[in-house]
Amino acid sequence: MLHDLLPCAPGCDIVQRYMQPDAGGAGLAVPAGAFPLRVEQIVLRLVRLPLREPFETSFGRIDSRLIFLVSLEAGGLRGWGEVVAQEEPLYSYETVGTAFHLIREFLAPAILGQPLN
Image (tube, rainbow, N blue to C red; front, top):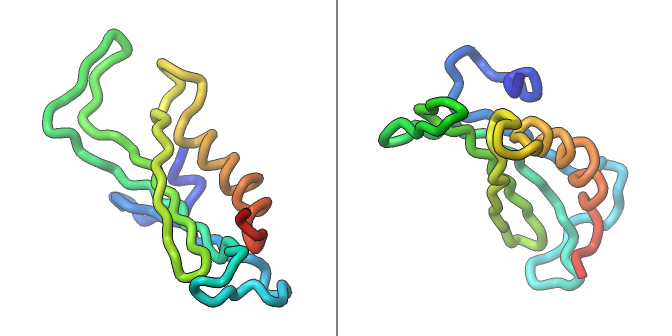
């Protein structure tokens, strides 16, 4: 399912998507140290992380975990975050797929090129 979100060759372990503001936006490049900072780039990364030992619960057994990383760039600075959802809605209704969809389609476009206060 998630490989449908991002193009990736078979057996790919890391997939990513770069998002930048539309080229038509004037004045989006903010020099380092200038305020207010504007979000210039958002990178969404999906990384398959093998576990040292299998993890088993009543829901089943997993040997690896899909990690969803988000990187924001603004004014020469970069910040990283992790979405701590699982691949399937077993324990919680939120999944890596739903979080990826919401960030890509709604949150990222809403903050790209916008000032951070």
